[in-house]
Length: 259
Image (cartoon, rainbow, N blue to C red; front, side, top):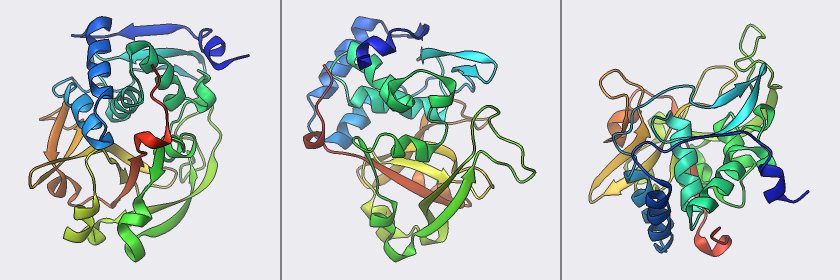
């Protein structure tokens, strides 16, 4: 069965908030004309600033059939980057819907067990679109770790119904994130905040944005005084955090825009 036929079987729930399909189609088509990947991500993600933060906007778990959800009324940190990455790969609203399935689910098949629940899943199953740039940026300062994702210290699961998996990956400790490292970060880099908790790879994710000499983390913030998609000073935000993982979107030459 072809990809386009397979994706039509999933139930859909689409909430576009302040936008219409035509309005989003226009935004995506305009952004697709921007050659620089980072600037395209900047332009797309800027549209969502101020959108409320909300957890659990996706539908599906071990007891509930997965629904293909687009919810632009509210989003968490991970659905925020899901939407942005799918839009930056697209040339239209219909292309965005197809690409969101590819980005969010292994092989584009909408099912709870196929959803990319972890940040490192996002890269592992989307290598044609996203590279792990952590070691390239951090050099010898980067650290390799191996974790059993989804398994807590007491042996239970963060996500019932999802098998635990061993995965080796690289992160950059906070003490190593100096001026030279920050200088290597690019607008459009996806920044995962490394989690030192057993069973998790990250605790949060956002997008690196440079504006002149300032460097921001653009993210769907869950903090009490924010709870919306916002820009925060990057260096200030990572103070006290364990470290970061950096995923970098590939350049246009390596993929074809989905019209």
